[in-house]
Length: 70
Image 1 (cartoon, rainbow, N blue to C red):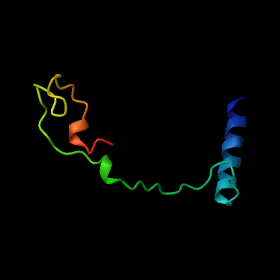
Image 2 (image 1 turned 30 degrees about the vertical axis):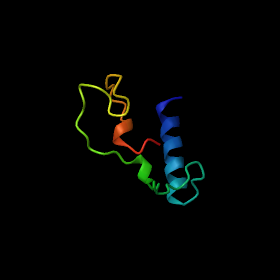
Image 3 (image 1 turned 135 degrees about the horizontal axis):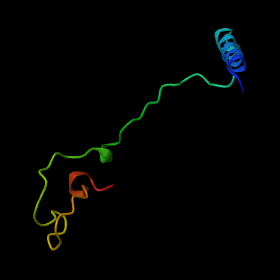
Image 4 (image 1 turned 180 degrees about the vertical axis):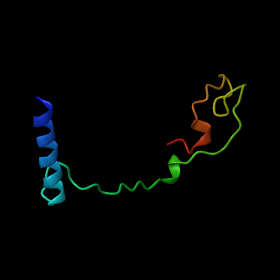
């Protein structure tokens, strides 16, 4: 494809878009994400010692203790 053919394709696509006939790209819709309470995390200090949930194992910073565990 040469430069003239590419320019023609771009002009054609822009003309279709401006005329409202651009079926190739659907109109953007806003995305709303409602967060469930189980997705929130508490601000706890990072532990260098035992896990808060299982004190027999060292903390591996999984985040389970910072959430409701879901």
